[in-house]
Image (cartoon, rainbow, N blue to C red):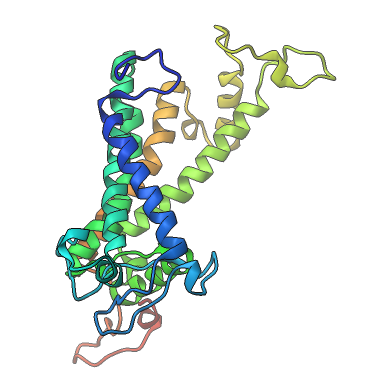
Length: 303
């Protein structure tokens, strides 16, 4: 049953880890978001409330990171004297994050395992590695570099934005080359996806009457191509220039998959370097004359 590819939902060896880990993470998150008591995030006996029960809403609510007094120590429930002490020190954050990372890592492994069983190539799991590495960077690697899980990203909307603003203030992430590559990956991926989808949709082969949707002209599993790649290539090659357009469908789709994945890899790598305070570029007061005197310029606004 576990290894059968005939099941409606493939399980696999990785699935035996994925389902319980992900289930515990989801149950823990929902419970903490609704019911968790305030957490002493800064370790200064000033607990911060994040749950709905303590007055938050969907926007302001979230799971508060573990206490700064805990640092990066592994803090399971049995390491505390009581359950209330564990909750007060934010043990739920470590519980959720570690089970979540384990769960999505197992999901990635399950993608590879299922592809292997079906004789497919392994690119699906490789593409999923990008969001997994990005999540690992902000939830695990950054807190380790900063010395405390209290510096991890809170699990909520307002907490996420607060994390972003503090990250920029402390590390100047917007001027980090790897983050710039990540922005190019995400926005470029969106642009290329829109370009590809619109080109394909505009060059569909009409196989249905004019008053019926073109989608009716496609049958799942058909051997004939459903759009004219030569027409799309000819259009786009003349719209810009010849070599801006792919004439090979396989290399085109590899590019569409690879561009955002590589960009997000770089962003995760950038967060991991900034975790250890190798920060973004800073051009403040960087222009001086031959005598060493500062020349004020727009560069001073770059930080």
